[in-house]
Length: 360
Ligand SMILES: Nc1ncnc2c1ncn2[C@@H]1O[C@H](COP(=O)(O)OP(=O)(O)OP(=O)(O)O)[C@@H](O)[C@H]1O
Image (cartoon, rainbow, N blue to C red; front, side, top):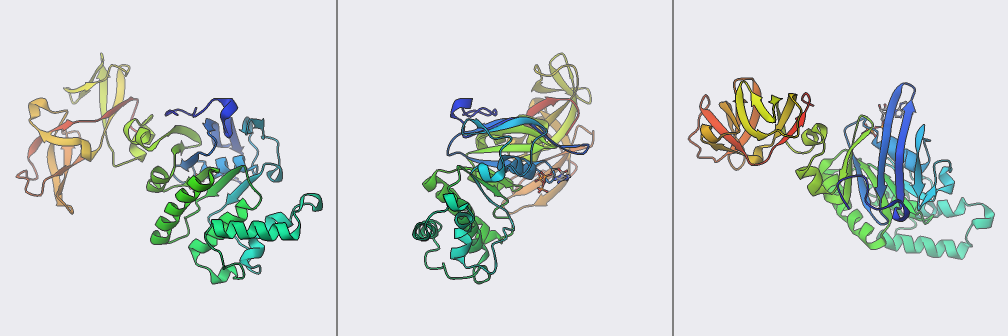
């Protein structure tokens, strides 16, 4: 597996998304999105509001049809297949369980709705629902109605209901969105264990970075309908592929610079940063507080004056106006620092990223 879209070769992939574009009138909700998902993988679709996460999930489900590209499921072209022919199970944030039906009937629904020819016998339905109730650890609650369950329990019924049809792929849209923080954390852990136990290929949408990076095997980051990067948490944190990913993940400050002859300059000063991969012209340097430490100005990557110093839990956070250009970077200092607002400090960046072009 690597940081690109290719987790596996096409033949082995559970899902292949190949150049998928989806238009809503003049708006491209998805722009040539390409990546693979391996069998049994848990992939998060992460991105800001409107980035195309739900649209992509709906394209996988067959609820939307792409204007370009194709989707393969288990090696077969599913692009033209209807929802009911795809064998996907999905759970939405506000999953409407049937309120007038018991937990048992809710879970059995997908099996009972099958055409008579493919509908299991009543005894088989009972057995299957019983197994699913055990799987989602709700055994004994089969006679309850949705209104008599907690939010987390309702989500687990929704999951059991999605699994009843024996899907090849499980799609979850903000499955923890409507729950309070504690239940959300518990259900998150539970979903991960559940996934490891059952081995379903699963794709879930979230706008919560921690959720995505903690829970998923790989995270796909979307921005304005484009796939910016797909990778494991370490890749996303340590090797962000674009300015957007760099600023989206973690607390990142950007400092516009000028590159000339492989060297980055700010206000006429050489920044001691390798810029050999950037063409001459504007570029942007990205840094994060944990990677910055005060140092002698002669050795500094950035130099600036402390504009603000405030107490945080364990230490002090300094805002530093870099090189007089008004760009602020933040750095953590020990609680007993002798530095004061107005002091000039050098900052050494143990890690930084430099991308050509203007700031994100
Ligand atoms: N049926 C539709 N008709 C027109 N535009 C749509 C439709 N569905 C989605 N869009 C637009 O497509 C873009 C992507 O929407 P989408 O719901 O996929 O984003 P998202 O990343 O899931 O956002 P959120 O986190 O807010 O749910 C948005 O600009 C949205 O307004």
